Each structure stands twice: as structure tokens, then as C-alpha cells.
Length: 131
Image (tube, rainbow, N blue to C red; front, side, top):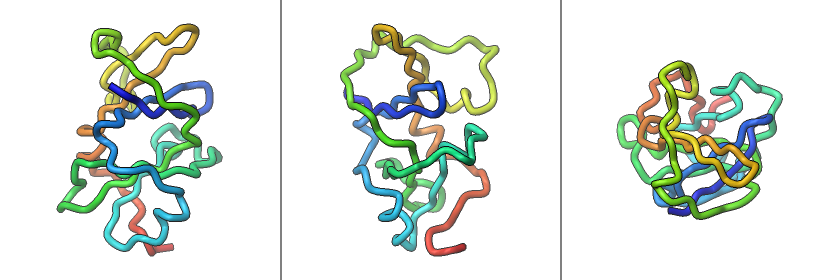
């Protein structure tokens, strides 16, 4: 499967392209009226991290709204086989509960996000068009 990979500080994150409707700029995400937006920077406690891209998830958010995941710059897209994704030990908690697993890609360690878990988040989130 193809994955879009971005870096959050020293952590690389992969989002399955098959669950992605489209990639937009964060400024494009601000123009919508019916989308829910969740920032990866907020989830990882890195409010100073720039999030120039929006990943529109195919799976519907709460109440059928579109879910936009505000993300750091998407640096690459790569192919990762399912057999190369390893589950995380139970000791990983917090934001890592939103991960499907981890992939070792050469020297890189990529945490694979689970878009279905992200789409079900019931965190306070930004509504487009509100300050």
C-alpha cells in the first residue's frame, strides 16, 4: 500500500493513501465550512510545529462531516507492504494508540497512523470558519 510520510519533530508518520481522499494546503482547509479539523501538532503536543498540509480522510468523521488531518509537510510517498508493519507493544500509550503499527524502512522508523481511529476522535477540534 502507498503511504504519505511526514515528520513530527523526530517522529516519522505514515498515512495510508488508500484512506486519503485528497491532500490540500492548510489554507485550503480553512476555507471549508463543514469539515472537522484535527492537528497532528496538537495531538503530539507540538503546537509550534508548522502544519502546511491537510489530509482529507475518506472515512467520514463524526456526524458525517469530512475529517481533515492538519499535518506537517508531506515529505514523500512510499510503498509499504502489510507484512512490513509491526504492531506496537502495549507500553505505547497516548497518541500512539492512534497508530496501527510501525515500519522499519532502511534507517527510518515510520509510525503508521490508523485513519479509522483518527476519524472517530471525539477531541475538542477546530471547526472551519471559527476563530
